[in-house]
Length: 310
Ligand code: SF4
Image (cartoon, rainbow, N blue to C red; front, side, top):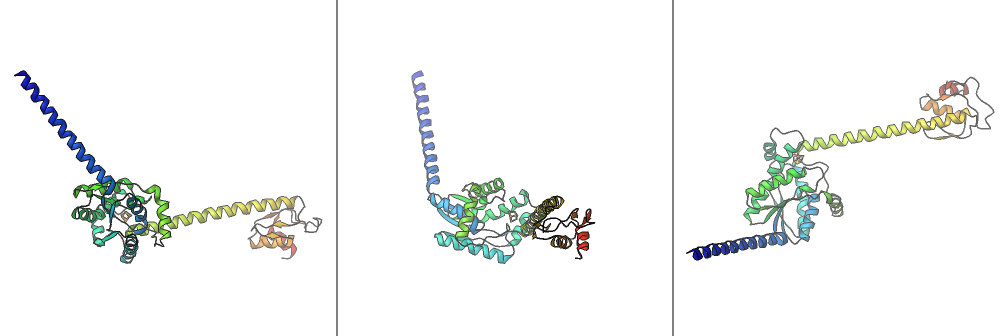
């Protein structure tokens, strides 16, 4: 009786082990198949961003279908332009291209009151854009859903992957989470080489305004820095010129505006053109420094110019 019970437990253990081994085998086969030759629906936000994911996924031997689902893009002319670029590129690669529904109202409804730039607004946007390609992936029996959005250093990578997974889970396909940001430069090179139009804003109406504001702010910053450098250079040149004048060794100098001058007349005139403000404490002429202008020892360029009759 005790022997029979022992045998039952042993057999049960063997059955359990066999079942476990089978499950592991099944899982491994599926994982291997997914790793090697998946059928993937790639949500493409635009042509330039799709270059690298398409290149890498094709090199890995996957079968791809590009799905353009971007109701966030406004105005419509911009949408058409981006769509056509993405479609042309897919066609050149021999990859199937599907266009989803374009309805900017879907995007307006999706983001609702989340108008300020940030992960909240963009997460709603990602969710809306992944819904259709995820459903399509299920419909055609694809293995996975992927997106080109994670190539952009301006996007919220974690939020993209989280939304991609939600959409994929809802439709019973795998989510091919990614982070292509390190390949961003390559995407720029590839898209330029392909002669693609490269947009300068993300897509939605808010992002167009935000991008312009950022460009304006950057331009202002550059102009301020340039003006500061010019002023510093001007002050440096003025100081050097004055030092020369003080030594009475004036021959050829550089005016405060950066031009070469050869005489005190020019120097004085230059000061006038520059609006004066350059102190002149001793001016000698170009011919040896002997003829210092009397009365100009504490004056400005304007004083010197007046004395010279300029
Ligand atoms: S900035 Fe881009 S990702 Fe964010 S809401 Fe606008 S279009 Fe969507």
